[in-house]
Image 1 (cartoon, rainbow, N blue to C red):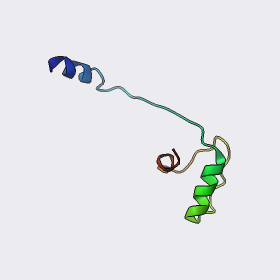
Image 2: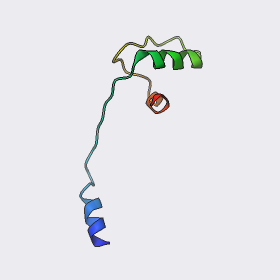
Image 3: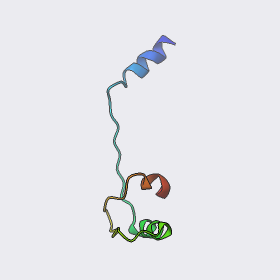
Image 4: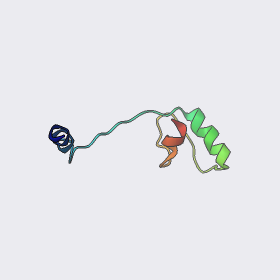
Length: 56
């Protein structure tokens, strides 16, 4: 068990980041489903927070 804790402690204070490019088509379809017209999805444009969980 002490070895497991040492491994876990080595990750404290570290960060992990990832990125991906969303295709505009699923974003546009999801926007229409929600009845929103305030977005203009384009390739590589940022999507609203939380949408990545629904579009993955």
